[in-house]
Image (cartoon, rainbow, N blue to C red):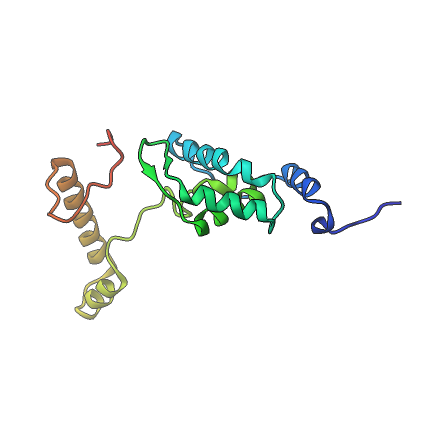
Length: 167
């Protein structure tokens, strides 16, 4: 004979242990060191708050104290987080564990970004251009922008979006 119970009817400590047994969410995590360091930072910052039950005065006081302080981030900068951010991150930690604290990988990672817009495509088709002509323009534009990036000659107001050391 077996029984089913609602997880939210269990004591807080058992709920946390149950969540630890659940498989990690389907979110693809970024695997770079900076992302991992930031996740660990949040885990370290929030773990003392998880011992207090949700809605308790002690947890609220801990969140207020945490929001009142400046924190040294893994990249060496100092930052003060507001209560809302701390509550949101705490909720993500409790719902998804360490995976909830990490920034998710872009859903279109590894795919080419759209360079020319649908508006350009529509205007080009209205002017009698074929899909082949539009593709040629897109290729030439992509090569031109890549050339500017490699030469370090991006127009003012634009930034180099390459990762450091990537050519």
